[in-house]
Amino acid sequence: MSIHDFSVKDIHGKEVRLSDFKGKTLLIVNTATKCSLTPQYDDLEELYQKYKDKGLVILDFPSNEFGQAVEDNAEITKFLKEEYQISFPIFAKININGESTHPLYAYLKEQKGEEVANSKYEILLEIIAQMNETRTGNDIKWNFTKFLVDKDGKVTQRFAPTVSTKEMESVIQEELANMA
Image (cartoon, rainbow, N blue to C red; front, side, top):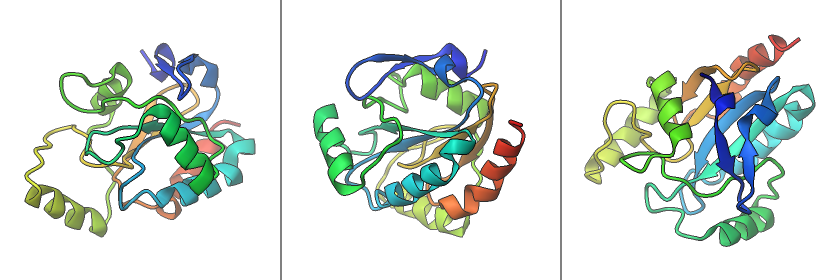
């Protein structure tokens, strides 16, 4: 099994087979529009523009898991186009934890439970604990957790929400180099 075995709905409700992305390096991100990390969209778009011609595709999966993406899909689309001019694919809002976890995210978490983190992540985990949010094991701990997927659909990395695109860039470059 690989990521290419899944289908998802885009932000407009159209079914998309992830097998359509065979041969591409994917960065899959759960997002929210009202999060303190939402400005990461600028960095994600910059990363996408820099590497899309080399085979990188960023896949955006909005989620209201943490109460910070309350809008419907149409409002999310409008917000992202107006505020961040996103050009990478945006998918329909999904659940990323719990009993109603989307099968794609269940698979991602099963493949890469441990995150590549930085010192800011420990602070974020403390804040989450103070909010009495119970996130255990492989659960997504917060918005903007990122999964890197190779050209063959294998999940190769999981990055904590606080890991910047600059911190991930060398790993992405290595993955893109493996595509040649």
